[in-house]
Image 1 (cartoon, rainbow, N blue to C red):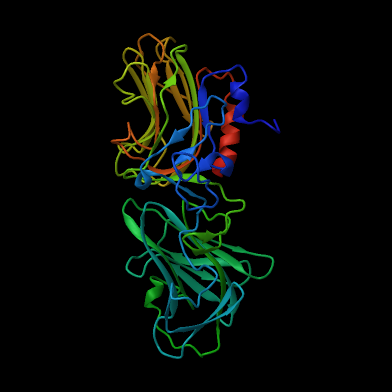
Image 2 (spheres, rainbow, N blue to C red):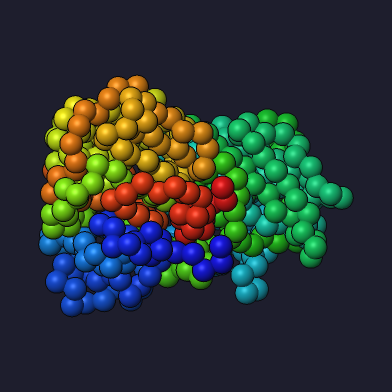
Length: 426
């Protein structure tokens, strides 16, 4: 299946659209398409449709444009522990390239370095690579004001001494470093923060570990990371909000959950009652419903429309279809933040239960229980990131979006392609 791309879905002149934020040549900072997007963290005022149908999406209001990003690591100054971003408490820090030597002082106190970048909602995993330089125990703490922590033994294969987090792991690397990780799962705000304490307290909160260092023993530390999700992934160097590694990291459109959206001119789908939609998405909040992509003003009430929404109740993803009546189906995908590939198979004229179906990450289909009535789709704009540009703003990231005005017999190639662009494995 080597060279397959979504372009192959449009070889018979099917109506539709394909938006690919990984392709810089398709994006512009302004809605007129005169200023190309040349780097991450620039606004996207226009993205070209790669299906060949010319259904380009744009945003004329500068403040409402999504931003192109590839950032995964939420920390900054990840290779400069000497910077002011890292708060030192009774430790000295010296740098050799990307490696920090952290040496506790001779004062009887806690000894730590902390990178505090504010708060986030939901599940996050913090990780760092550490090597003994006199001390063989170290701890991670998500915030100095909460109880999320884990302590580790840096001898032999390594071990987790204790933890209050959802999960903690340690892995010995070939060069003698240990990669430590700790996952914090919560539905409320938690610190987007990483504290490294040495040596670790072996029982309970490591912030209670009061001791006097000898002034020379310490630990070597490199590659700190804080990211959304339940596991530590490949390290990403971050210097500032606009200066970070991008090679090998998926690109996405970042929607702020307030007023960001893109829209097309009206697309004529009147010749079909069938639709295929594949999207790569990261949902960042369950605080409110959000419209990821919606054809027409209200896909739950307007004839000949469809939509893909994230729903706060039940933390689900919802496929909307309205022929002459509504057929809606939801599928649970867990609390935010969560990254997924969704596929929708829609057929207004099919038998009840087959008109509207959705699946996530190539799994089982969920089908609507009610009929969608009759008729074809209409001629409507496509809105991406907000319902009709006025409500249900989406708080999250869009990696790929493919819409085809026909059913697709085998969705696996499209889902596989999209998962690769989204950075997940099906």
